Image (cartoon, rainbow, N blue to C red; front, top):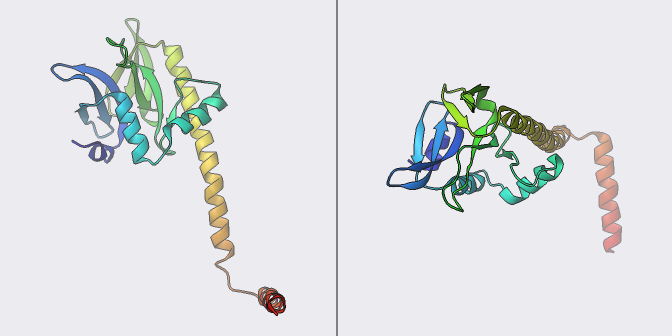
Length: 193
């Protein structure tokens, strides 16, 4: 299944996994309960998602990382509904395998601890085991909530300005507007002569 098709089911987590005879892959979880094996690394999936959402991943990480005071493990906002936090899932076997997966903060139901492992309960009733402590996961969620708020404020400001523009210029012209236009036309006409 292609990544784009999986996104229609509402992606809620993508995690690194070693799969038999396939190697370093990614498991994708959707809100509708789908669990898909993707024969690409988590890093590749992250890059494909950033392309799909037309975002510059490095610039986004730097912008929000600077605000949060983080160089690594920065939450990724693909849009206002898709804010993904990094979560440590495994110990890598090789140098470039990567240990981090990503989970949507909007789809985390609760965090619990069991047998020394942190469990992230998702809205689709799946549980993800994390190697990070419960405090670390909660800190990532808090950072994700900050990024979500900043993202919404930044994009709402643009939307409001655009809305105000169309609302203002969708009204009929008044006599005052016409008088200003006549004066401007006369000024341009005299400048041309």
